[in-house]
Image (tube, rainbow, N blue to C red; front, top):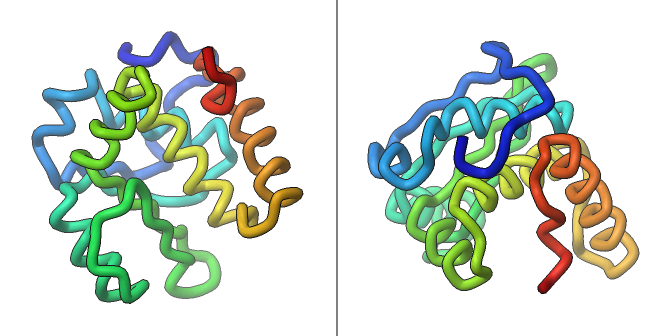
Length: 152
């Protein structure tokens, strides 16, 4: 598995859609990795692995920003429904390369990040950002993945 072996079992309860087939050439079994990351973070969500073009379109439509971003989260459409996390392949690849990470490791981190946003975490203020980073590091450690905030 790209990104390390999971200590948390995969589950079929998290739907993952690969809208951009190049994800499968970039990350081995991206659906399973995204699902494990979402489960580890306690997510009740769906995940879409999309292209930069699709994320740019969604970002422009829902956030007024006409550019791709690494991950978008959408709150549930109604109570009891899952939220949605959408990731942009090109942006994820570029960020991973820039940080010297494998794309699968970065994918897992961003899924965890998205689940935490859906659970109400944010990083708008230094204290909130630090709490969110610590939660991400704990969850990723349970997956056997490195702390994304530790450099070197």
